[in-house]
Amino acid sequence: MTVQSVAARIARRICDQENVGYSQPDRRTWYANANWEGHVSSPQNADCSSLVCGAICYGIHDTYGASWGHAALPEINDHWTGNMRPGLEARGFNEVPWNDSDLTPAGGFRVGDVILSAANEGGRGHVVIAVEDGGDPLVSEAWIAEDGSIDGYLGDQTGGETRTVRYSSHPHTQSGAWTSCHRFDEGKFLQQWPEFRKGQAAQAKPAPAPTAAPAGPAHAHGIDISSHQSGLNVAALWADFVIVKATEDNDYVNPYMGSQANSTLGASKRLGFYHFARPGDAQEQARYFVDAVRGYLGKATLWLDWEANAVEQGPGWAKTFLDAVKGMTGSTPGIYMNGSAVNGYDWSAVAREYPLWYAGGPDYSDYGASYSDPAVPSVSYWGSPLIHQYTEDGRLPGYNGTLDLNRLRDRATWDRMIGGGQVISGAPTPVATAGALEVDGEYGPATVQRLIEVFAPGYNELYAVANLRRYLNKTVPEHSQKMLTGSGKLAEDRGWDSHCVRVFQYWAWCWVKPVAPDMWNRFADGWSFGDYVDGEPGEATWAALQEALNRSRSGSFRLM
Image 1 (spheres, helix red, strand yellow):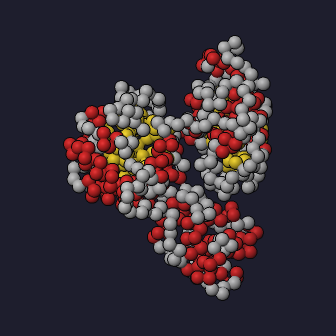
Image 2: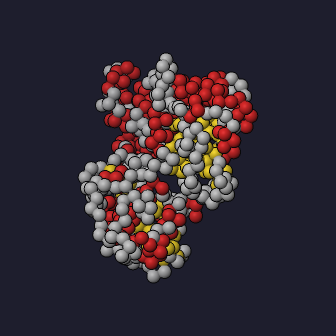
Image 3: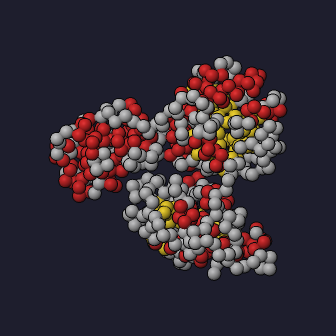
């Protein structure tokens, strides 16, 4: 039994089970529910990096007796294809000399080899694991959701969401997209983790509970951004959370706020917003901030950025602002400040109610390379801050500029902040989220915006309709489309033409009508199937779209 053989066996077993499909947001469910042999008894999901990292966790656990959750196991929540190389290298893996001409390592592949297509190295952001030796081995992977998106239903609807395929037949092999191969080296691993040498640790495998798997760490790593990072691709950057500048004073909104926020949610990262305070009316600035982020309430944490000349207004101003935001939204906001602001005033009244996001500590500007885990500072009034911003000069693969790097101490507290905390008596009802469209049969700005949120976060209507057409091509069989349009699948580079409308009408009639039959009576009383599927968009068509969008997750690239 070796790390490589166990990892390969588990990965293939997961991919061979029809119960395991593909999803980035639900990437961990297979690992949380599989038993000690890698079997799941109910539909679950994985993505490419969670499959490989989870399989390696099984390998290290079985081979060396490492407890679930031990740091030697490549924790799923901390790894993705953009940072997998250093994660592997820290756990006994070496990069194997690579032949760029035929995309094979010297001497061929070995069982358990991890084959990486790193986006920051010119690849596609994907990873697979070899499950046999040879020059053209079988590889196991979590490939793609049933609708071509990053998020699918639990379980494998197509038989190919998770799969084992021949290396030579893989699209990334054929397009030359693989970037490196990584192989486990036991000697290196034992040097890095000497506690697992014989005689220093029990070698017998602990017997976990049937569904046991390590819980995710409480902490998380993330960044905060503003218009200065307008060129940053949030989806391509490793971050568990992103805090976006929304507003400043009562006359400035970050012009990139929407695209940055939508990209964050679309990449299944935690989202926060901050308001940069200036001297003035605290309640007016609170209202300005809440109005700007109104469409994201219930999805994001809210923060007051307390620095520069705002600090001179004192804790009373800050508390007035925080109280106002809490009353208007039902969420519990937090406050950002540095050590001089904390130590210069009495924050006892604020600290009792509102979490701290703290900037500073030793060597604040000297961490630079990437995320790290410096000691959590002890701060007056709060003790340990919820978030520690430990450098303003950080660097991450996928972005050429410097970034503020932050460590979130407790994910659960973050999630409770979004959920609303204690709403002040008499506070207004929290504002509805962006998904609540009025089903009025009008293809107006609100419907277009919601369409963008579901199918093209951060882009425009043209991209959204193109992705909707892709979705329809995957959900409506080609033979049905030929009967409807006479031309097979929809071209994906066009808008709402008659063919697209007809296919959507067909989809809506078959899928939405059973769910919301009253909708059709309101807009198309007495219509038959042939009357309705006519390629002419009217109130009933747009009402069906609105109904479906209301049932759809933002950034899911699918309806309902």
